[in-house]
Image (cartoon, rainbow, N blue to C red; front, side, top):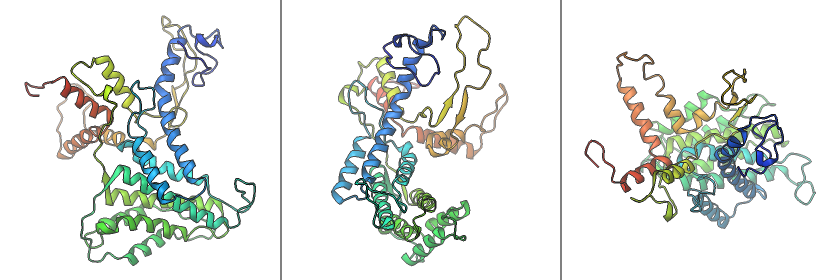
Length: 392
């Protein structure tokens, strides 16, 4: 009740409070639509806030040191729920969303690539489109730096490999960005990505801690040298995708996720008096890892029926599209998928648990314990003085 606009998720039907746009719809649809709206809207809001922040940052293709500090402060504020009644979006920045956050920065930056004939906000053509694109890459580097400062920690040791050198790194980056065909933009293959990983983790070639920021900056600086001379947008899009791959490998090999610290308004911190319903409501709100409708998946509700009718009124699949990339880009999803072949589906069949499977189980537990819902569960159990097997 109280859903006051026509729903775009379920065609040709709406809540009764919308004056029944389709009177032939299911008589119980007014019970479902507000719930769907409540479940799905927070993710659109939080992602939209991040994307709008990126657009504001890239609009003038310039990030000053002061703006960089403000950006870091803003990102840190998005790691927590802002109000006590849980009406704000879920935390937009959590460890399990880092890959999306960085990839989204590159995706939004692509909207601001300049080609010949493009005009600025004053309606005048850009004097030097290539220079504008160089400035854009510097802005993306600043955003990635802010994200890494907010979400990651170095994993490099103080001493690097004896064969590590700046020249070797720059030469490797140039090899990755070079194209064999004149009409192609750069495209990094899986093999090239593995080669970069081996270089960064090799005993003799691994970088020292003091070179961490230089590595990422060099990835952008060398990349800017390969911006298309004729400002071909498709080629520059390929270049941005390649730089994103290089940065992804750098982060995977040279950095690690910061331990997640759940930040809640004081009234939401669990106490011995916190009731179960309130705790469940907070858990639901803290789950920032769900998928977004119309973006990560699309559903086809089809026909509606009264609950007492037993026949199938929806012959087609409920899901018409699910983005497979989400299963690899989110650590909790990826860790869970590794468990799916660990168990026998037949009841009573004895299983043999290998060391690899045990490690996958431990990894999954480690990953989910770095999420908001599980951090809150731990706080709730401590507040309730819960015991397991007689131990607290």
